[in-house]
Length: 252
Image (cartoon, rainbow, N blue to C red; front, top):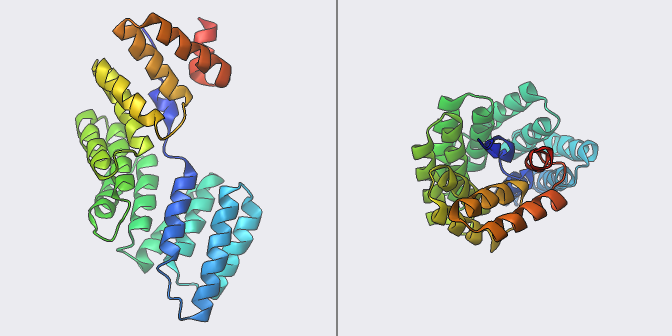
């Protein structure tokens, strides 16, 4: 029996959530000079987080907070920073503050909902993700929908999860994370042609991961395409030698 490596796929690349925070920065009141400077420090903090320079990121976020202590996006970004250093208690506290300051902010709802689902608090997490995906103010509804799908997966609800992923792809048919999940689910449901199609769509907008190669390899084996399966295996071992999938192949 082949192992299921879906657990190693995790959530989205963090940089995408940073982009969501940045997009919300544009909603700040530009007529207020303190808010304007807070926005600058906030954007710097987020950019430094994306670069992995967490200390400098924190310094800029503190300056943003000093300029505008009631800015929900500053707390949203701080929560994200605490997530990156695995301080989940502080992260939750910051998300709660952001949500209290701006209950209808879809970026806060999305990030906090994903965070709660990650921690096993599925009911509250799903409620926030549904809010984030249904508001007309959210111009990236596919992100919250995909998060909701992954939350459903964590709850063991594959059929419901697939429904959310498909809704996400209706909103954005080239959204790589949703395509990844549908590739995996299609393979697990023995719908190999669909799994192959989702992978091909994914590769038009993104590059291979160890997960796409693993499920691609298994899919081609199931379809009888031995040569292509071997090609995927070769790429997997060469490009991702430290991945759990490659270790399994080498250790066989």
